[in-house]
Length: 114
Length: 113
Image (cartoon, rainbow over all chains, first blue to last red; front, side, top):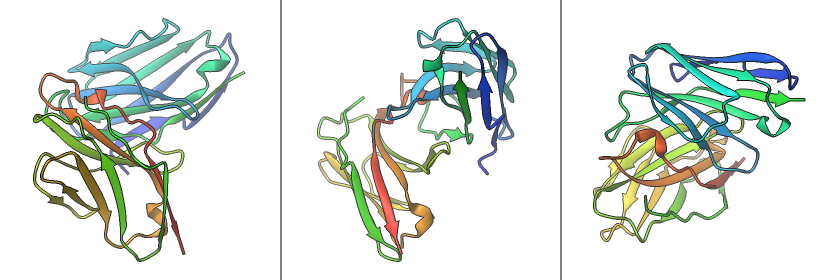
């Protein structure tokens, strides 16, 4: 139990569906992140939020839309995804985006796009 | 961030020490060495980090050579639950977003009974 909870753990969706991934952290952290982990590839940073403001967007397609309504919650809204978007999506949090801190990861949401 | 090189896989008997090496020969003076691990189908888990001195916590010890070109993560008494991919990361902490840690391919450690 890392203090970062992701739901759902598994999601199967069609290319025309709209779904959302949810992340919640109970650690009082100020920074939250979305990562994508495809099979046999390194972790890819997608979005960074600091104090509820998006501070980084690493050229992620617009079919992925993040939302951070408060410092404890982070969403990833999914719309018209492609089969190559199938991956493990990981949420993480840290005290701040700078400094010699550590990242706390959730267990991930395994997404399959049919 | 400096590139790190790790063996793709290692084995260790349960109860023995697991010594995982990492080469970071181009590391600069302001870069820390971080270790994370990822158990299958879970999120990565922080283990330890250090700059120059050796570090120890309840999970592991980190030994950094004097020239800082390499380091070793030591799990003193490996258990089956330590089977995971271990990532060694060199990163600066000022002027760099913490979440930009490059996880690479890591070392798959398999602990056998």
